[in-house]
Length: 327
Ligand code: ADP
Ligand code: MG
Image (cartoon, rainbow, N blue to C red):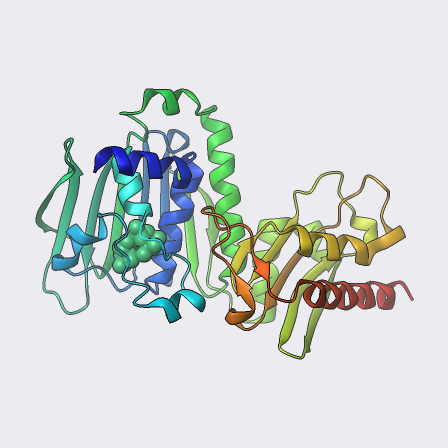
């Protein structure tokens, strides 16, 4: 079982940042409103995620660590209309096959918290009592300790942490309703408070993208025929020489989608220098049945059933907003 999990881990666990992404998404799926991410040594030494979500019942702890165990899909209809972020039931099994993983959790109904450690070759899971408030903490220590080839591919502590920071930024923009704290080597690096009002949201966007972005941002919010696009796009004068401020979301999932990026780029047309990139934070909402999210294990790509239609909608909303501010 361990080997199969390690092979699967190749897809899910590229580097510390991918572990962080999977675990934070699990916390979000669990309904957490506050998530703390503690990193040591760029994640190679420790990745610890604590949340105040629904928790995992004692009887489910062992199951949560086994492959293809997901509590999120019960039948094929669910698979077609995936709303939760995780759905493959691979992350925990994969991570625990390439690191020392401890899962501590308490549900609202339980009196006490329980802890499960995956250890040993056969991934025997030991369950014991522990102390924890409602929610879950997953502690991932010594990533790739048993796969030296992979460990060798880790970059410097600084580089790995910057990838983690980027993951947290992207998630923070998707979930204004959740508080996030990110520490590195016991120092607080980012702190995002719950943002309800427009001004609080703009403040979080400024924290993530910089004050200059929000000062040059045009707010968009347009709904048409089942499609809803909202967020901020930068005035052309704020063009970037790299694509470091391109944040797009489809139904709350962060994406790096060619079709979306193309539509946005095209909406700027001649307004940008030929080597310039637009800056944007955009959210597209549409019926979950109109998209396939199961295209790639890393889940960065989507397939729209009506791609052209979606493309033209994004293009025209952004183009109109840009033209209006230039006029
Ligand atoms: P998936 O997210 O695809 O279901 P995972 O391997 O990431 O698979 O997680 C396995 C299961 O463990 C989840 O379906 C969920 O039931 C449980 N789980 C994982 N993390 C958490 C968490 N932070 N809070 C509550 N339940 C969790
Ligand atoms: Mg998951």
